[in-house]
Length: 96
Image (cartoon, rainbow, N blue to C red; front, side, top):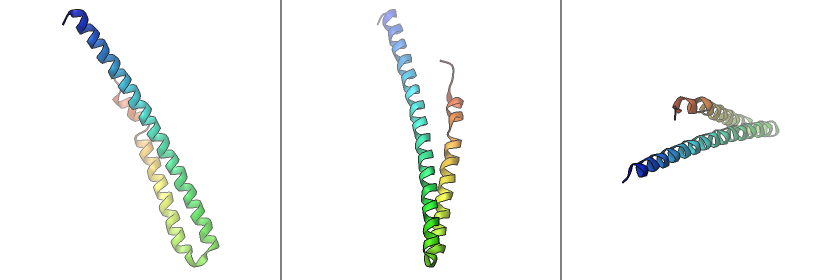
């Protein structure tokens, strides 16, 4: 292997690393968007269950418990997204 081959190979590896890192950041952002979508859906489920509780007093206690569980899950998703958000990528980045 010549010196030129080694330099080209190193450049190729560096290019691959940069592409991989870029893809990782894209996927992290996508996962965060999904977490927020899940949280919004859980909030919508909770609101629906609350309305159902008003319409079905005989099942209100159970429906409100389900609504609370959905809201707690939404909060959990949002906390997870905060913990793994924009700051997480910045912690891992280094000089190229």
